[in-house]
Image (cartoon, rainbow, N blue to C red; front, side, top):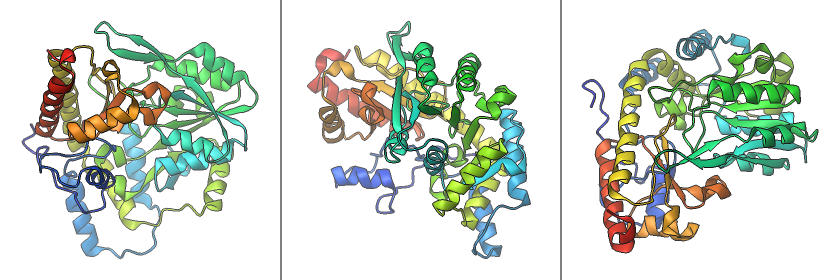
Length: 406
């Protein structure tokens, strides 16, 4: 793979508090060393050495007191946004939160009152649902339209007539957008984003745009930051970004929420302060700065790994299975696997994967009703572990469901 970076070694996180590893061992306490989870969206890969070495040096020299943003931090974030995304950001637009999910919770409370509607395109990342319902806002489910591509694989599109109908309802105040889309791996086209923005502007919707996966885009596709498409879009948008998905820094707890409109920014900040939501973590700021200034080459190599892995899964499904599908993705490092042909109920599918195949995915049903019968696989792993997982899957399906195996 890479001569410079190690994308082949896995560091066991057993007993270290890793959320997905602990979940896996709760189901099966005894597992072979080559079995790893493919669920929660962090990486089974070493962090970029530029970040690791930079953090070591920093710790040798730093005092880990209360901290906040500083000039080099802003330079790193602003430089990354313009260099990678053509997104010109001013320092005052940036607010830091411990994560994008927490920022979404803040934004929902800031821009929709209780019982007011928040529109989202489903199936979608499951915290979207809880961010709306746990805050007593109304979930407005604008389901994506499923069709088939030339290979018979599921593909999805926005029902703009339905979206416009929901947008016209005066009780609906917010669109919660996932871009790129998790779990479907869609990188929304510029045309789709312009249609979304036009409808949002015409109907006075605030757009919370979760763009945490914006760096992870496959060759031949291009992510467009929603708010750069027009001045009007920028005035209604809360753009949620972070280095955490791109550089395996989820545990660092840092995100950059970019809000151009001063009035919206003040409302968001007021809600943050009500919740005492601050980032005082010295190491979090430094990790982000190092990622954005030192680790760009690592990210580019990582993207090559994700692309190879998704193609491996897609080819394996095509060559080994009948009516089970693994469409290629456009962005994120998450692939949407279609097991509906097996006819298993959601809990049965989970049990089958966990207990019989010793495979631990993110369950499709957690992303909404349209996710029934699907599994989401995390591709941010060394290829050899993915190959072993696929072989286990084939061997078990060959015994239990031979009619779906070639």
